[in-house]
Image 1 (tube, helix red, strand yellow):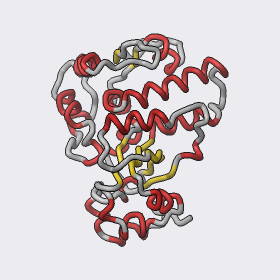
Image 2 (cartoon, one colour; image 1 turned 120 degrees about the vertical axis):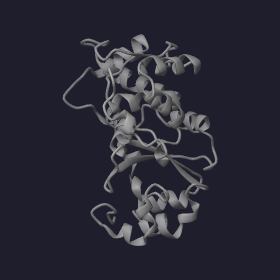
Image 3 (cartoon, rainbow, N blue to C red; image 1 turned 180 degrees about the horizontal axis):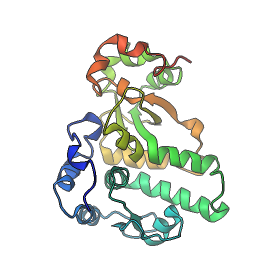
Image 4 (cartoon, rainbow, N blue to C red; image 1 turned 30 degrees about the vertical axis):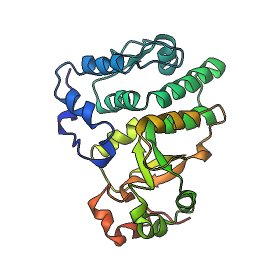
Length: 251
């Protein structure tokens, strides 16, 4: 079954750079799930329990909780839509972080079951899984500027730092789905990863995974309007882009 909208994805978009090589190949394949599984085998993807990862049919889990099923079987139910497709790409690019989140989620489900509320740990894990970016920098002053919502300093005065001293890697698959049709108000939950902006994706993945433990809370995440990132939108070259307080909210 073809994934609706997949062939219209612009793989030159800056947020898709870590995924573009695989994304282009999958987009051209009739059996896209087989291509994803070939990459999973080549890269030795596995759960933290050591089970080989397989992108499976959407109904594979049947009535079992999604995260619990993945942890038990290594199979990831994958529907023919952009949401699940980007989830698969996130597994391929950031496998340690995805496996760590799965462990946290499945352990919490085993402990507390599926209730009306998730609790702070599962809330944070879900926010990261669905909507996070990894904010990679050793510039703690820029992280503080983000925390203060000092958009002028962050995006204008320090514009030259972006892409060098500070980089952003899209991780959340719902975020990537939204960015398929970008609009100004898209806001991610940023997880600060203290590494140089020149760090490679594997190092970032390992460092991000190390931050994900049972003390995880939504309070550790910072709101980041992603089209404000220099280079992520042509419009943000104009300082007036950041004066829209409905998006770039003051503290």
